[in-house]
Image (cartoon, rainbow, N blue to C red; front, side):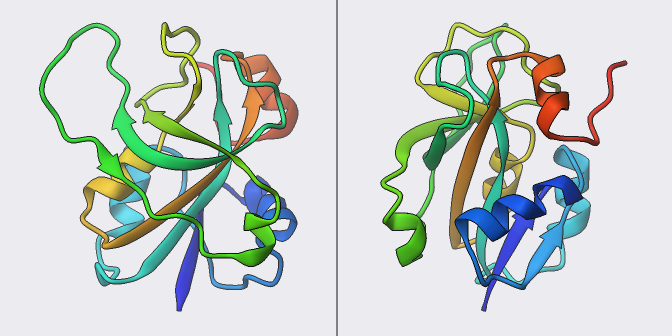
Length: 161
């Protein structure tokens, strides 16, 4: 059985829209620590699909992205680290949407500026992949163009400091 991961309750509607009929949904909470706490006891062979909102510097709001690779976003330093490949989403309904394919950069904070283009930004996916699950897929829907205000129009749960 596969498990659908969403960061917050407001993303449940994305499951209904892009993966209709899925009922095994786990709300993890936003960010790295919530991911570690929520997923630490799951068997590593659990099939996971992470679906949620993401920012992008240049993709139009509403763009549906199938993530091909996950990386950390650290704009101030460069160091060697793995690029984590994801599995294609195994769902005929979703495949028929012909989603854009892109890399997802995960950050510990909301990304408000970045030189990276043709990608999406979230706060969970690299941590999910880094836990060693053998089958991770991800669907991201662009909610904003690196604007916390625009994100708040669609999502909830992330507050300004």
